[in-house]
Amino acid sequence: MGVLCALESIRTPALDKIMSVITLLGGELFFMVIAVTVFWCVSKREGYYLMIVGFFGTVINQFLKILCCVPRPWIKDPDFTIVESARAEATGYSFPSGHTQNAVATYGGIARYTRRGWLRVVLVVLTVLIAFSRMYLGVHTPLDVGVSFLIAAVLVLVVYPLMEEADRRPVVLTYTILAMVVCSGAFVGYLYLRGDTGAAAEDTANYLSALENGWKLLGATVGMLVSNIADRKHIRFETQAVWWAQLIKLAVGFGCLLAIRSGLKAPLIALLGGSAAIAGGIRYLLVVLFAGCVWPLTFWGFSRLGRR
Image (cartoon, rainbow, N blue to C red; front, side, top):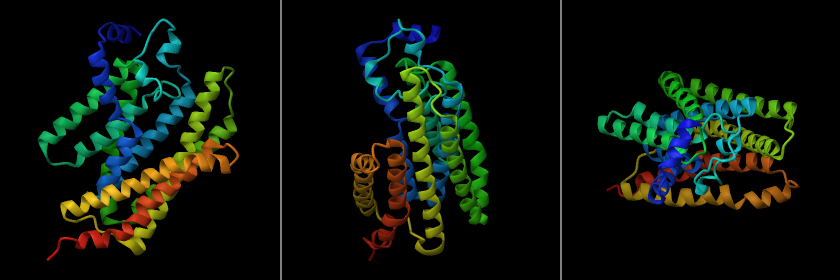
């Protein structure tokens, strides 16, 4: 806690706002936007790469959280204060850091495959700043951030050769996604077998958070598997288009994605009798199916816009 207390002592309102903005760049929404943008408009291969690194990192992250049950810094030390704007997103147990994992998976993944040296430097600096912001805001310890950074960095390096092999044998990618489905299902099964073992309300909330995240991962990976098979056998969508057609593709596509992600939340929970976890799994299944199967059916039209 010594490092966090030292950072607490140097906080200022202006720096609080800057760090709050920086930390948002490591959130789930930014990961989704960047990964899907790459998938739709740049390269399916690189899009899958970011999603696979992000998935395996998230599964490991969630498993360690529920296994180690490390409380947040302000729970460890009631006298310690955090930047209040960060509290809402600081759900679940503390160890390891989810935002750091997302940052390394997203920006580190892009840095791994880009050939632009200046962009690599910018992305690495941004990743470090996001990790630092989690400590500055008081929601994670150096251990939380360091372990998460290391795990995600290893995944960035390990998964890349796998994607090169998938270029030669596309079925490798399908089997990798199938492994992701199995891991997600195993994680959800483990949570149900384990049950809510916490005696405090905080433990119950963290367990329910992990369960919902597990179902979301399961829904998303099933959607990825269906999308990959459908594209490999039938859709075969193109990513290329003129810049203004790409902007239209992204604007309309993300509008629909966010409508599914946010608009179906309350209706599905009500339909399923209050089960937020299963509802989350269905939502993320639909989000990924739209991103990987439905919207790409229109890409042939976007690729022809602006052609003479």
